[in-house]
Length: 459
Image 1 (tube, rainbow, N blue to C red):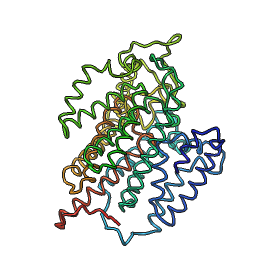
Image 2 (cartoon, rainbow, N blue to C red; image 1 turned 30 degrees about the horizontal axis):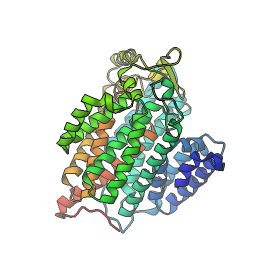
Image 3 (cartoon, helix red, strand yellow; image 1 turned 45 degrees about the vertical axis):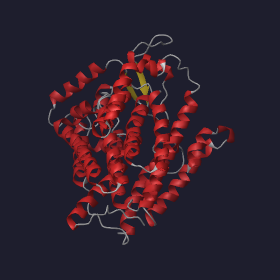
Image 4 (spheres, rainbow, N blue to C red; image 1 turned 120 degrees about the vertical axis):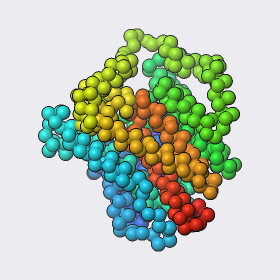
């Protein structure tokens, strides 16, 4: 599978043009294996491609039969596979997913909000089933489904090792691709044209930076608690690659989220890190590249007149007028404080994005939607803390702490834009959450039954 990632980077061999067909054929094979053999294979395949979403997106946009529905086909195959394969007798029963009820509430309310939004947009409810808003909602809901599939199927330790191995390889390949592209960009001084979006397809440099802020914090958490020397070397390599991509994303929101995450780590795990952070904040201008300093301080060079509007896919984004966007979002909220204007309506009604998931959720889904969103973060923090504090095995505690760290990063970066609803941004987060809740459920079961082992299947 490493070849799939590298194919994008070796045009001399002429393999890049065949990558969509290779991924398409692999996806069909994986869907069949997930349906009739092991659901885990589908999880591994999707996880590997999330950091390399540009490759998957090229397949989706190709003219191959049903290519645009390839992710849906994989998800449906895994769900049906759970039914066809039945319960695996060799694996410990762990009960229903702890997050099942919040997920059902999220799905149900957001769907109702989607239909309610038709009145705000002057459409009929029937129109919702044939427009982009329904597709956007469906793609958003894929992530909670990934959580459920992961929780109920990815139980064997050997599968989890393979999962993390593939994810780490994918992250390194994505960073390598970014490095290969960025070295040709003028970045002695900061210019808007210096910013690249990485391998997340239609998402931009802010999302690229936030992606690495969140998942680098996760790996740092693993590094601090997992004492296995070989795995720590791998963690360190992944963090170095992610830090490079984060640094040259020129995303101030991502920088801030990463620093807050490190501050959290210092408070919870290593007070020495707080000293390091304090010293860094005193001397950072002499440590980081000049272009990064210029980006953070706002003293940058630009060829020609700087534009305040940039495009990301089919969305226009205001890079300087966030205050006005936030005020507009609050205006929408005050008009419909309970339920808002409807799911995914702000952009269609204003032509702009809010640059803040919390305010967008308030504007579109009201207080009810915001409480549901905050409840998910509360559940994530609680479960991560529980596993970190109560797990008997070092590696499992590392998973809990790593998830806590990336959750803190996610909470912060979502103040600066949508880092929550896109599959390539949040897919890994929900998969990690499924693994975390497996361990949380086993801790509860072992406490009730009086067992002292971690409950991990080591077969």
